[in-house]
Length: 293
Image (tube, rainbow, N blue to C red):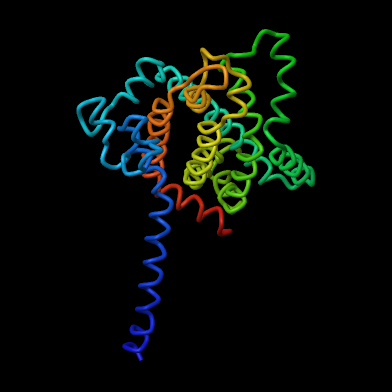
């Protein structure tokens, strides 16, 4: 019976492995292709004569004397000072995540431990705001920001991103807190802890993977945002995503597409590192949120 089962499962294993490999190739190809093209000149990577120029670097060899060039990265980071956009992005992301997690953790814990009906309605209201298009929420901030001379600065963008992100963190952390038995709170109180001490010393260490998971999604929302940052930040205070769009130029201004390609690779690489570094916490956090304890 065992040998029959092994023979029957072998084709299934081969098919599933092949499917996973195909899926990985399709998912990874755009980034790998962009990474490869970022070391070419525009005449190769966007060649209309022959797409194989992007592989063999024909124009790159003629223009630079080598098969690869770092001109795109030098142009983006040095000439166009993309490092300023990267620094602005880091400031916006760090403060958005810290504020969102702090408020979301306290609010999610309070709503999860509350026995009143208003907790449900507060979550429903938060869900409505989360479902609204970001551009709708941003438009409500524009007038006061212009009147108070706050438009174009990083703190204003952080405030709006926190407001947009807060319903998501509240819902996600609320679900994690529901999975933690109330007996832990009561046991901590029996040992002499206050409600806040029980929350800080007992509950938070238990649901730390959930905090990491929520923090990562908050990070991605702020890191990849375009609508909010492009509308609320001036050109001097741009984050990376609007800066990349600026490299492409417009109908009135010529851009440099290879600067954009190099900037895209530069902006995407940290995400891979972050996910790989926190992959264990992310998996455990998502599992904890899916299984009720």
